[in-house]
Image (cartoon, rainbow, N blue to C red; front, side, top):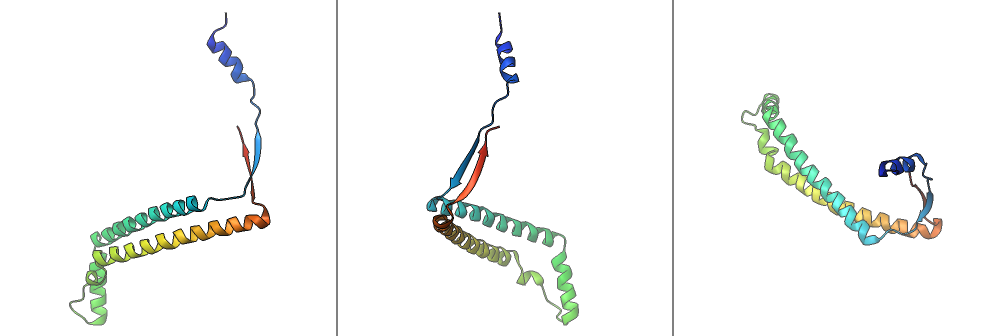
Length: 135
């Protein structure tokens, strides 16, 4: 009598043959590429806004804005100069949000252009040869 464990042990000792497949990438779906580039740029925009907020909070809590304000007041002779009036949290986050929105729009457009250019270049070059293996 053989058990299931014996059968599995015999199966695992035999080497599986690896298969290689060579495929050509000859077309990228335009709308899929646009959606993917939009989502990637949206995620990067969120990271930009959150990162800007965290950096501003760290700089404000370490007292760097106060030290720079006093340094600038000593150099320029102005007594009531406050750096946080110029680079307050609202101004910094507003600027960061505008940059994130512009990056999202421009990145999505560039993803669409890259897809169109690749699909046009495939007619000349025949596509990219990609190899896959089963291991």
